[in-house]
Image: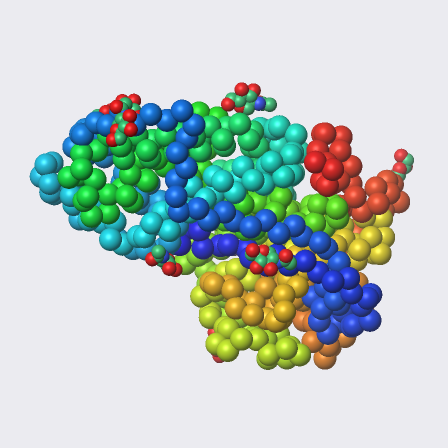
Length: 478
Ligand SMILES: *[C@@H]1O[C@H](CO)[C@@H](O)[C@H](O)[C@H]1NC(C)=O
Ligand SMILES: *[C@@H]1O[C@H](CO)[C@@H](O)[C@H](O)[C@H]1NC(C)=O
Ligand SMILES: *[C@@H]1O[C@H](CO)[C@@H](O)[C@H](O)[C@H]1NC(C)=O
Ligand SMILES: *[C@@H]1O[C@H](CO)[C@@H](O)[C@H](O)[C@H]1NC(C)=O
Ligand SMILES: *[C@@H]1O[C@H](CO)[C@@H](O)[C@H](O)[C@H]1NC(C)=O
Ligand SMILES: *[C@@H]1O[C@H](CO)[C@@H](O)[C@H](O)[C@H]1NC(C)=O
Ligand SMILES: *[C@@H]1O[C@H](CO)[C@@H](O)[C@H](O)[C@H]1NC(C)=O
Ligand SMILES: *[C@@H]1O[C@H](CO)[C@@H](O)[C@H](O)[C@H]1NC(C)=O
Ligand SMILES: *[C@@H]1O[C@H](CO)[C@@H](O)[C@H](O)[C@H]1NC(C)=O
Ligand SMILES: *[C@@H]1O[C@H](CO)[C@@H](O)[C@H](O)[C@H]1NC(C)=O
Ligand SMILES: [Zn+2]
């Protein structure tokens, strides 16, 4: 999917407790941290139901109407296009634009040859999954999580500062206008999801039952009716979430139960209930912070061409590409074949930038380098990909283990913190560090600074969780 391309994959797996690492951080920081990953991540199965339930009390009144009389074609195009976006398919409904009105329904229905029932049902199944997750986790009812939005503002402000510090105008990349949606932490009224489900089912059976036998036997009619049902459900959702674009919310509902994040129409979707061990809130919040920054920074390095006046963009692509290729070549575990694609580099670049931004925040909240190291390890710990095979493929990304190690070796203070030396695999000389937006990289921008008057808050993530608690938000004990 074009615009949803920046999925940030984490594979959900329940882990066996592993013994503490004796690996060398200067050789493979990911393995150094992740070999002792003991997170337990809940495994929610995504519902798969091809039969739309008949809602309670539904009465079939045996009408025999023509399709034009039971369907509104206006919204069909809207949701059909969103389906194409979801599955990254190119064709549009323009093909039917010049068809006379009486032939239009047949033309539109014909388009549905491009999409199968299972694919359309992803929306209905997502509604069922949202309900299932909410009924299992039982989060306190909430709309717009105060803490997470405060955190988002903090990260956005820091990103804007970073942009300005490097001599760019504050709003040049459009970062200011990015909004966020923290999925089931941000809107979790299960009654509303149930109402949406009911609206879907009712509409589906109403339209189906009202149709004449002849129209009911049309090709693709079953799929077509599903779009009417989607619209009915989305109307319920929109009543409660009118601050977000309906098209974004459609994609969000589908993505809520999955373990990913994406940016679409200027909004960021971040699912965190299902991708973390909520009993390890430090890691859960670290994951959330990093992925949020990753998505914000896609504004600076989006998919495709960025608009830099000079050649900084292509230089950065080259620099990051060379760096990650080196890591791939020297990894103990050989990555999947043909893993490298230059045009995937924007994903690695935003990871480099995200780590630099968060490490600066971490420095401000630390009183010694031990706290900084602990925070960096916690950050990696929240992002560990513990799957059977290291360095396996992810669509449109380089293997996550490589991309994360790449970000760490491009963090200017890393060598100092871990005492890595020239020749170590993770070592990159300061002068060779990639510069996605920087004119110059100075170690001074990353150091602790004067800590004489700094309060010991226990480190950045501890402080963040304390703030969360003060705002009434808890991970874990939902
Ligand atoms: C998680 O769910 C998937 C799909 O149902 C299943 O294949 C897998 O074995 C489960 N994993 C664990 C660790 O329970
Ligand atoms: C519709 O038809 C079905 C069977 O053909 C019948 O059972 C049902 O009672 C009818 N509904 C109404 C409202 O007439
Ligand atoms: C379709 O049938 C339902 C009852 O099942 C009825 O309430 C509705 O008005 C009908 N719609 C149309 C367009 O006739
Ligand atoms: C169809 O839906 C559109 C958009 O929701 C609405 O403006 C229009 O009035 C509807 N048309 C009919 C015939 O209901
Ligand atoms: C629907 O399409 C998907 C590919 O997107 C395919 O995996 C699946 O088997 C198809 N289902 C049916 C019922 O044809
Ligand atoms: C972010 O910056 C804006 C504008 O400077 C300011 O009003 C707001 O309080 C800041 N928010 C946070 C959480 O720092
Ligand atoms: C959830 O939504 C329903 C409306 O569908 C509303 O009656 C209820 O008050 C909401 N619950 C909370 C806690 O906001
Ligand atoms: C980076 O640039 C150098 C010099 O132009 C070139 O030889 C190299 O192939 C480039 N690397 C990538 C990954 O494109
Ligand atoms: C970058 O920093 C180095 C060392 O501090 C300095 O010599 C050089 O002039 C700086 N370059 C720019 C463009 O500021
Ligand atoms: C620390 O606080 C003291 C007392 O307020 C002040 O005199 C001193 O200048 C401060 N030191 C720094 C480095 O800010
Ligand atoms: Zn991305």
